[in-house]
Image (tube, rainbow, N blue to C red):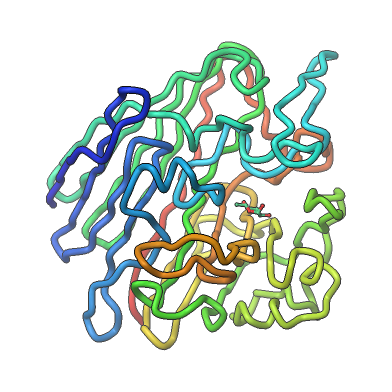
Amino acid sequence: MKVRQEKFGEVDHNTVHSFTITNDHDVEITCINYGCIITKIIVPDKQGNFENVVLGYDTLEEYMMDTTYLGAVVGRVGGRIKGAQFELDGQIYTLAKNEKVNHIHGGIKGFNRVIWDAEVFDKGDTAGVQFKYFSPDGEEGYPGNIDLKITYTLNNENELVISYDAITDKKTPLAMTNHSYFNLSGNLKRDILNHTLKLKSDKFLELDQDFIPTGTMLDVRNTPFDFTQERSIESGTISKHPQNVLVGGGYDHPFRLSSNHNEEIVLKDYESGRTLILETDEVGVVVYSGNSLGNEGYVRGIPLRKHLGICLETQGLPNAINQPTFPSVMIDKGQKYSSVTKYQFGVG
Ligand code: G6D
C-alpha cells in the first residue's frame, strides 16, 4: 500500500489536505478533509484500463461552490426532514430550512462543509484515513455534543470500507452517509443510463411533492422500482410511473433493504465490465440517478449534466425522525453509533 498527503487548499486559514491511498493492484482512492469528500476512485476496466469512476473536482474552490454534495459525507442527518423540525422528549427542535420549508442533508453547514481532523494510517495490507470532528450541542439546530469518527480503509481486495462511529452526550438523531456519484464507464466517458442495478429490496418509499417520504412503503413488484433482478437505470428515466416522473425522470428514492452484508446492492456497466458491490449494515439506500445535475459547471472538463452519476446513499430512512413506523435514527446519551458500508470494485 502507498499513502500520499498533499496540500489541497485553504479555508479560513485552515489547510485542507488530499490523501491518496493506492493498493498493491494500483487501485487508488483520493479524499480530502473538507467534508471527508472522495474526489477520485481509480479502478481498472475489463481491458485493464485504470480510470476514475466518481464525479469530482480538482480544486477546493469548486467543492466550496458545489451544491450537489459531490463525494461528501452527509450529516448529521442524511436526507430530508419535513418542516425542518422534530419532537424529542416533549421538546421541539427547529433545524435550518435549507430546502423550501424543509431541512436537507444536515443543514446549511452540514458535515459536508466542515474541516475534519485527519490522520493517515498504513497497516501493510490496508491503509486509509481516519477523520474526526466534534459537533457541538445545537450545531445546525441538533441537540447533543457528538464526537465523530469516519474511517476510509482501502484493502488489497479492491474494497473501500467506510465506517462511521459516534458518541453523544444527549439523545439526538444521527444518520450519516456518503454522497459519491458513481459512473463506472471510466473518466465519465458516458452517462449512467446503461448502468444496471440490482437491489435486495422489495419496498421503496413513496415521496411527496417535496421528495419527502409520505410514510407509505410501496411494493416494487411490476414497477420500474423492481431491482430484484438487474434493471437499467434508463428504465426509470423513460418511465411514466408517477414516482419516476415526480423526481424529474429517474430515481431519487429510498429503498428498504431486505438483506445486509449479502451483496445487496450491485451496480454494473457492461461496456467497461466494471462492477461495484455495496454491502452495508444500514436499513436503507437512497438511489439517486442525478436527475437534478444541471447543465451548469464542469467536472474535470466534462460538462456536469443530468444522469452523469448515480448515488447509492446507504443510510437510515429519510424523515425517520418524524415517521414512527420507520426504523429509528435516534442515539441515546452514551450509546455508541456505528455504521459500516463496504464498496467492492471489480470486473465481470
Ligand atoms: C437533489 O433530490 C436530490 C437529493 O436526493 C440529492 O441528495 C441532492 O440533489 C444532492 O436535491
